[in-house]
Image 1 (tube, rainbow, N blue to C red):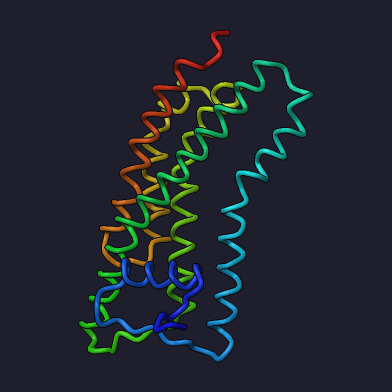
Image 2 (cartoon, one colour):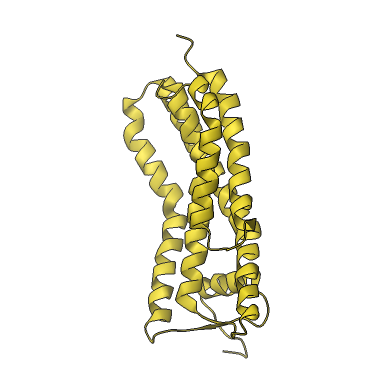
Length: 211
């Protein structure tokens, strides 16, 4: 209309993800005839949930708030803020650092074997959203560690004593779950966890019950 091409917001966001995360020359294809429309509706539902999540969170809080003490309300607010900030930080970290590097390395191996850079649109966006959610939740682990320390489920002494084994387990798990065959993605995911874990111990020692 009037020489302008209308694009829904979801399409604009998906195209931006493609341009941000994939090197030039990479082609995405529909795969099967129903994949693009199915993906479009699934992503629309995800974006709708994200946009309405503050309203949903407020309604839940308004429902439970009358039954909480003042200190419990303060604790709930701090937990929600800490969880949200940690999750968003993980999503940003994944989007601007982990995913671009991972895709570049994977496509480098495509060049090595002489294959064309043509991939399924569903496979690409599934990897993107799975990566964003996994890394986002990964960054929230310190929040739950501090929570467990505060309520006496875990102790800072035990977490400090076994942190070497925990770090080895984290490096092993990230090496398995990251699609990048090189250790780069594994290190990009594991090193922040080590830093966040140390921060969790630092904060945990200040909220840990004295008795």
